[in-house]
Image (cartoon, rainbow, N blue to C red; front, top):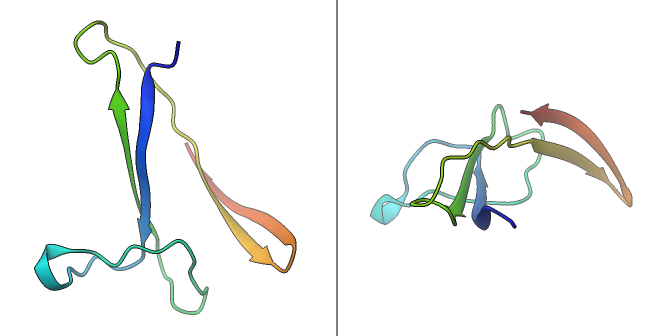
Length: 76
């Protein structure tokens, strides 16, 4: 049984807030404009009131060049 359900993964490169307290989320970035990346990961805990459990999350970033993709960072 899966203990969670994915809600959303959002990425952005600027911590500046935009109009109406929103952020500029994107899925593609140009390496010339990015010094850092921020990721928001949200999920539903299906067992929130039934049992404690641990999880391990791996986030990976890839560089795309044509049909090739190259992994350049993994965060655990």
